[in-house]
Image 1: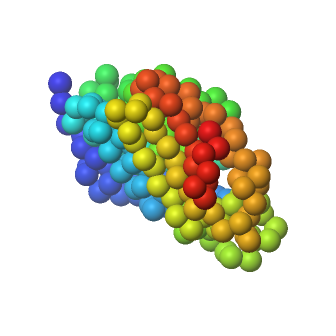
Image 2: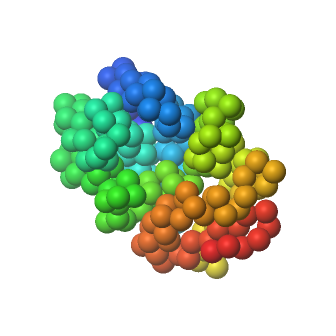
Image 3: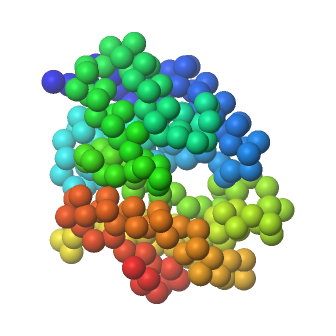
Length: 222
């Protein structure tokens, strides 16, 4: 059964747009990196492309894009437990829009399982969302260049000159490839901040029978 609700419907929803915008405003006030439309759109594109390249059908691809686009709306309530509150919010929105219960269940399960503290790749949509979210490391997510000297999260993101996710279906690997300016951030700083995220990516990759790798400045680190 095809979902009546498409990714295009979600992107055009004024309600969803408002929650994303307001959630990002709260995170900006708290000093977090960008979590607005650039982040959620990139996550949707990466999650959808990953499932498509792994041979999943169009319906699963659409659900992955929807889950990834909506995954951070819970930040409008509070950063703490935002995955769970976001899943509850998404349930209300999708149910009201008329999404079939089985599709709604899949989407909110993925959203509720994307944050490091409680995340687990319980289904393909959740696994794709985890990988897409945790590998979105880029300079443009830093709001204020001055903060790179005092905030290690901003410094690590700002140091990334190039970021890409490479899937090799034949070799059964998926690799995050980064080029980092080591004058801004040492490679060890990246590990200090993102090791838990990379471990989570390994679990998500394993769901698909893949090995997750990390390559920084042409050196394989995972």
